[in-house]
Image (cartoon, rainbow, N blue to C red; front, side, top):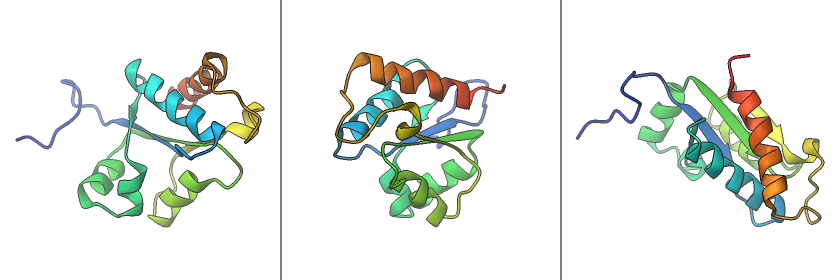
Length: 126
């Protein structure tokens, strides 16, 4: 079995780590990451694997072309998890900066798309 999970062009992956927390903003971050993945913008990846220091996951992250971290609230759990694992080169989004406040944000297509659009911009080369 090959360890390669990249496209045929062998480009390094663009990885997406949402907080996926229990609050409404965690659900929005999670759904936005899933949508970015389904649209081929990047690949949602396992934040728990970073926390657990799973060697294969850590190596994939080390080889990533770009990393996007999506936090739902100001606690920045996903960002802190990557930083504590030694990763510092990544794009970071906090949904509060998009006007989505924990406990007050509907898990709606409109709010998910707002995060997707911002995520696309952060994962682009521009």
